[in-house]
Image (tube, one colour):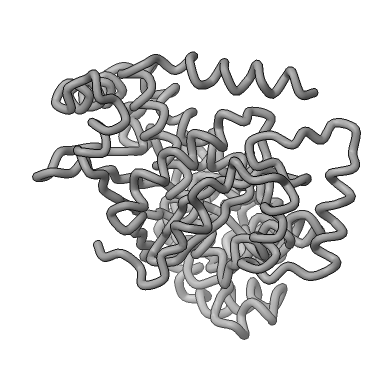
Length: 385
């Protein structure tokens, strides 16, 4: 993990203390905002419920100190809780000192289902569909020629016999889209054809929010010495011991595990909302993934390695940069502030925000308590309303 060549520490440091005008100036220059972008920010700042607090610039608040795969980010977050933004920035600052976050993703595919009333022999119907595979996929891709042209679209399918039903699963690469509308259109197009081939009655066709083919893995490390600087009255070994103990509880107790993962989603949901993404589908994807092995588990892993605390996160991310609400003026502005080139890049930033929020929450829980910082910000925010 090496530091990026253009470390923007001077830009990030102290950003939250600057007057709003100066913050906007920095964002304008760093993110190449246009007159139209600045006008949109101004319109939101004129709303009666706007409060200049915790990097609120109008339509959303801004988290700082994020370096992901050696690229720097100001991160827009839409949330009613200023402490979520503060926690994301505070957590990211620890990781920034060792080069930031590093993520990878092997594939990004969405799955949809067509459910039929089972008739006849399963293996016989399976062979019929496999023989017509090329035609079925072609028919699906005819519903979205552009997606197919750029290398996405329907790529494969598999079949299952579940109780008294025959279930067809379509696998689609949505590229930079979330993909729900794309795959639903495909499923409804091919369902009658499959029904005719197999002589089975259609029950329904719909996307699945279980997303095992959209997994992102991301990690980062923190200097143990920085924990000492943050809490000089506590021993580093004791802080780390408590963090690992908190993680162990999450692995063995659903009461802690659900709250552990909720803290991760605090940040990811806020980023999804800012960028016009479907946070409800994301929540469904994450929590189903957490229990995929039959026992609900935390999405992050922490360990000690030499002089570092290593954090890792693994979760499905269905972030998009095209289609639906991602094309509203506000969402496009959020994407511009992030300087995104793809939905995969957004997924990495989402994972980094999740890991940063998770670290901040665990650190506060095992040291001064979660309420001290949270309630301080909350009370200050209410005073300014």
